Amino acid sequence: MAFITLHLANHLMAFEGIKTYNHVLTCLRLIYCHPIVEVIILLAFFVQLICGLQHCREIWADKKDAIHHIQAATGLYLGLFVIGHIAMIMVARYVYKLDTGFEFIAHSVRVDPWRYLALPAYGLAIMSGFIHLGCLTYHRLCHSHKALGYGLFIALSGLGVYVTYLIYMGFIIQT
Image (cartoon, rainbow, N blue to C red; front, side):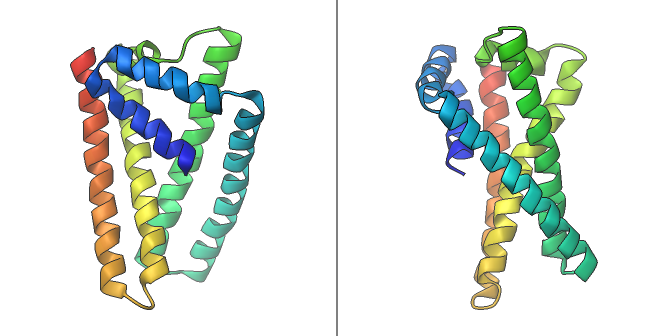
């Protein structure tokens, strides 16, 4: 969760300019591109994927409520996105020796045909993350404070749409 929060916060830095975005990225890379930390992050994603797939099977087998099904769908999308995203970044960095900073991302969202794939894929991933978090929050509160849980589910889902919009605008302004 900490990695994703920092990753999205870095993307929001595009509003401050390319230099700021790349400076923050350089600082964050000192932490999360350290070989040991990178392996821990990758292992954490792998474990989350395995646990998530098991949870999806339980949700569908037990025919749970709509929020559970939304949780399963967003989790499944996030899992697929993360596999593709990690593969793309690793190939770009380690095979082609490309810098995966601002220009790498900006290129994928402004050049045909990639923008028709990249924009919806990234946007859905960001929104899915927030919606997934909203589902988890709802489930934590549904027995004791159902209305609060549902309100937080809606709020976090809306926040996901807004953060996606802000990140897109930051990149559009700078490109």
